[in-house]
Length: 254
Ligand code: NAD
Image (cartoon, rainbow, N blue to C red; front, side, top):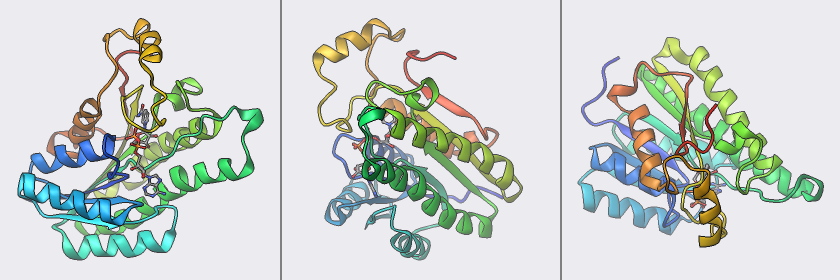
């Protein structure tokens, strides 16, 4: 059905100061979207929502949610549905990395990575799709990783790579299964983006090594990723479904 005049989007994992989620929330708000932001720290989410509405003049809602907690996700999506304009987009951006080599990774770490990256994405998307179906319109974007495509990334090892590969499969299947409800589902696979996800491990030295293999000749920024997400969510993205956009500067061409 028709795009509403002011659609709303939900961005998970949006609180981190230098992260992809925050940049995406700002990009969407700048383009007139109402935005719900979710992350572990409630105060940080509320502050971000305030910042979004002050800066861009759009409705915004900040929710403290651990996406791996099913009930918290159910309650939060009900609140988004009640308090914001029509939800059209969900950006499954919240995620944790796992740099531990396979032979050393603990069961606990392995499970936590899948709890957040896979099960959390499942809970959020399931609740969002219930809302999308009522309106016969929805856009899902999973934030995967080049790590999922090439067998580990600069830092991510098996748990991370496997969890991010699962997101590619989900998006493709949702694309097939949910198309009849007016819902598209796509993935964005970033290469190395300069954020805090690896706790400052993207050192200048490491950047130099990366740059040698990067056709575009620079490390990616959060705005590079936010632009791709905005395109997939927006009016112009409606005929793309089941695709993966590689936002990696050419580091992995396949
Ligand atoms: P980031 O660590 O800055 O942001 C991730 C956010 O997710 C944080 O704010 C964190 O608090 C939140 N989060 C973690 N667990 C959560 C949970 N259980 N519930 C709710 N929120 C939770 O990292 P980023 O680099 O901005 O990463 C954003 C996404 O992009 C991640 O999914 C990451 O895997 C993916 N990605 C990043 C890169 C990169 O190079 N930075 C590359 C490929 C993919």
